[in-house]
Amino acid sequence: MVALVNATMALADGTDFIRLNQVGYYPQQEKVVVVDQVKPKKAEVFDAQGHRVAKGKVVRSAVSPFTGKTRYIVDFSQVKTEGNYTVKVDGQSMPFIVKSHALADITKGAMESYYLMRSGTVIDQTYAGRFARPLGHPDTMVMVHPTAATSMRPPGTVISSPLGWYDAGDYNKYIVNSAFSIGLMLAVYQQQPDYFARLQLRIPERGNKTPDFLDEIMFNLKWMLTMQDPDDGGVYHKLTTPSFEGFVMPIACKQQRYVVQKSVTAALDFAAVMAQAAGIYASFADYADFSQKALAAAEKAYLWAKRNPKAFYRQGLNSRWYKPEVSTGEYGDGRMEDELFWAATQLYIATNKTSYLEDARSSMPERFVRPVWGEVSGLGVYAWLQTASGPLREKCLSMLKEYVDKIVGNTAKSNFMSPFGDQPSDFGWGCLAENFCSPAIALLYADNYVAKGKYRKDALRAADYVLGRNATGFCYVTGYGVKSPRHPHQRISEADGIDDPMPGLLVGGPNPGQQDLASGINYPSKAPDESYADVMASYASNEIAINWNASLVGLLSWLDAIF
Image 1 (spheres, rainbow, N blue to C red):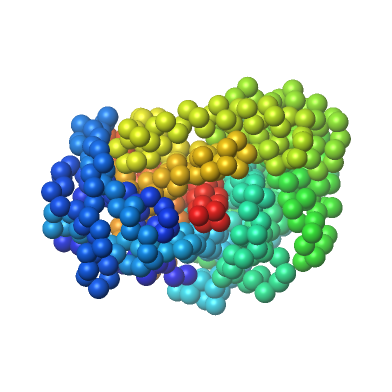
Image 2 (spheres, rainbow, N blue to C red):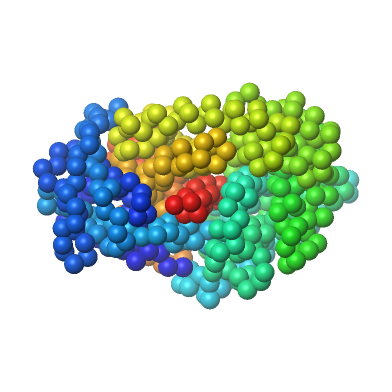
């Protein structure tokens, strides 16, 4: 796993008041640099030979709504020739790259991080390099927790549930989040299948006839199928230890692992993604038997959910009555209409059964909401847009247009030339994925279906923000850029004895809630866009998660396919 060549470079002159995309610009892309609190007297770009190739122009200034700091937006868009450059402002400098497929390497790195997050298998040096590790969590001796027990599978029954991805900084596996992550990535795959057919990843399956992207996703789909109760079709909410493991490597973990309570949200998310995947994988001979199994499992899970609409996962309530108590990630959700809409939509597309259409119509949202794990109706909207003439397509198109048209006017007055980042609500838990990458993917859908070419520039600007043109000056993806997170809240990166973190991971980002202050985190600021701490203990701002990386992969891959 190798990051970009400039990933370990020190910041020139020890400063970082120059804020830019640290990963790469496309030749025809606008190239905007933001200078933080220093009014530029001279701004220039030099090529690798030291020749000045451009003078920058300050196009406007902006005042932070959070701190009152003044930022200056400098345009270098006239630089269009591929190469390595340095921008210099008043004696300070930062490197940047211009090249075709500027985001290809980081897209591959973000997707290859899923291989590094695999559970129940050896992580081989051939593909992982120095991040190789022995098998951990085989999950072939998993117990049925009392919350999940039935007469056919009483408490303590041992089942096998191997494979899958570790969810986040911890070592557990969660159906709700896995389904969302796969659902979003498969939705983007459907928009750009030719791009993913060419995307070669360093994974063991790379020699087969299926796109590597789909191979990696299949590794988690195989685990998900083991999480369905074969007797009644219900789906266990998660596979977990009672409490979080310490910051040790997987092979050192000793706690018993359990499958815990079946939930209606897990069942519907499972049904949605299995129906979606069934259609996509049907044309790949490497997985010839998957699609039929997946669709049958989806319909069975959907039927269970319809029979158990109030079966929400309530971890606190469960702990009062059942032992051992479980205190790991809850992924709790008190409503299921959005999951029902997504599942009914995907099943209707897969089967053409009118009962699914009726359910999709009755649970259809009134407005578009960017997809996140706890609000997945947007994935249903994306699915309808994919259809040529689906009965709910026009309504979905109208909702999406209304949503994106409220976004695109934000950039012209923003601090960092981004459609997001100037509202307090843009920041919080997992904000870089949920409030930057995910709505930027919605912009790309609008670019495809509402007005070709109208929205992609703002989607790319959102990527620029995540990759360095922001208030902290961080490229928020581990292993990329000249200033990226070194200490993510992730057990493997902390325990593996390697100085560098696992590459390709998007951290949660600035979080003014600062829920981890009791852990002694020293945040540099209370300002929403500066409330980020690159320390391992900062789970509120510096954790990683498969759903967040799914948003990153979706955005960067789509951009790289069209620019």
